[in-house]
Image (cartoon, rainbow, N blue to C red; front, side, top):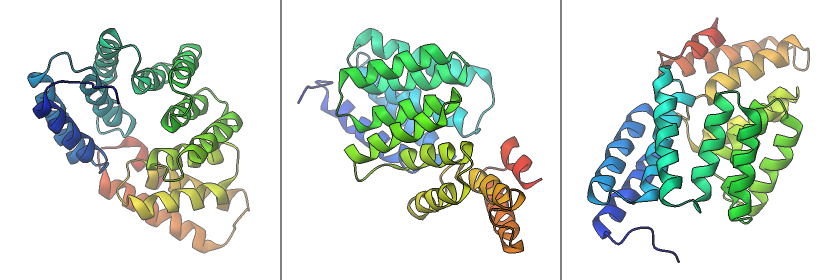
Length: 243
């Protein structure tokens, strides 16, 4: 295995940061950021720590823990720093892909995603990030195919894969499939940012499209909307969904 740092204390901090990040909450994202900053204080050339530090900012932005445009810019700076130190890290290119998609630079987003896949064709996460970029680019049918490639490569697929798949199903009007996917995600990560909001949208869309006109569907939408706000009261999208 390729070593990414010679500093074992920095590596230990990095692993602790990854663990905290995987809990998907505002508080644990902040904790992970502090730990990655500690890793970089111990080894300022630790490219992988820059990647994950940048990822805490994309989580903050994507989950609407922060709507300050500088949050996304800070993520961009950190990922650029990571690739300047080590251009062979697939995740750095995948996160750059996400950032470009947020900036509505979809061509550049897809290019960065392709770069990530080319660096390691067996890296399941790269396919999931590329699927996310395709969702934002308005290509949800391709996103479904791409994220399913990710899930075949990693049967223990992370929550991100399910969230991306649920979003793609919603965008193609497959609301029942989206609901089932998001419910699976929330059974693993009950506080996953954005998932309750997306569940709200899917229940409402099932009802308005008459795919599931039962009044209970709206009650499920209401419960999901309330849960979204309980997790992140500062999210405008959560309040919009409940409204």
